Length: 323
Ligand code: ACO
Image (cartoon, rainbow, N blue to C red; front, side, top):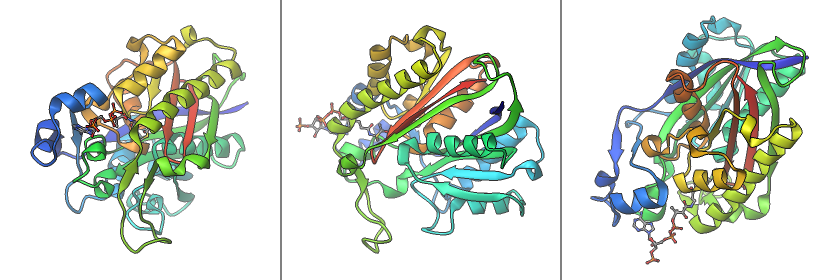
């Protein structure tokens, strides 16, 4: 059985850190309110002229170094972003050029905060199908560019960053003890597209729009959908919550992560949390959190890790991985 193994992880965060206290000088908010409602203490914000592709390239280079491979071995680049450098071409092709690659193929995937789970699933399917041997999967965002910095209900929640993983085809017996991506599950429900969106785009307006969100409604759907897609992964693999070593959730909000953990019976000690330092980096949040937990030795080879995310659309998904 051909399965995709994670052979390297990398991350990149812009240098500039913006604290809640700094935001409180721009909009009517407070460190206390932001921490209590979201668990966010700070976020990284890209410098002027620093684009999504720059973040993506830095994370990709870190993942390549971690895996110890030659970039020429990469057959496929899938980049998840809702904040591409340009409407076209795909930001993934800029990463391809920066890495000096002229063979293989590169394209973007757009599923907002679930983007990395979608990109990972696409790459995993190319590997399982035998069409690709080595794939670079990136989540990269500069959400700071699409925030309304006068809207306190949204601007305090997001940040910029990028994370990347390298996947390689591996052969195994096909049981859950073998390394690699064991299963992926994706969902979307377009009836809820008005609860979280950007009010602008190439087809509807010449202006770059801003993030608009019905926070309470999003929160309610997030906990229900995330719990259900995690449950789906457990059932599909004949596992229970006790079998999972780590959950790497999308980092939107500490209360969403706590609510999901409670619903599923996961102790908070097994939930990787970076939302306090990174805020919500959309498609970048899961690979950023994964790279951090692998880098500091929490996530170790052989462990079972469940990735999950939910975002605008709505879209949501999970991936179960034996590291
Ligand atoms: N500072 C101070 N007060 C604020 C702020 C702020 N930054 N933002 C809103 N308020 C005020 C509101 O105006 C409101 O005041 P009012 O009662 O006088 O009208 C009050 O705080 C309560 O507002 P609510 O929106 O009801 O607060 P809630 O407890 O729902 O928390 C939050 C808001 C944090 C946005 C929450 O709904 C949430 O986390 N939603 C999920 C959103 C999310 O994470 N989206 C990310 C994309 S989707 C995803 O990734 C899952």
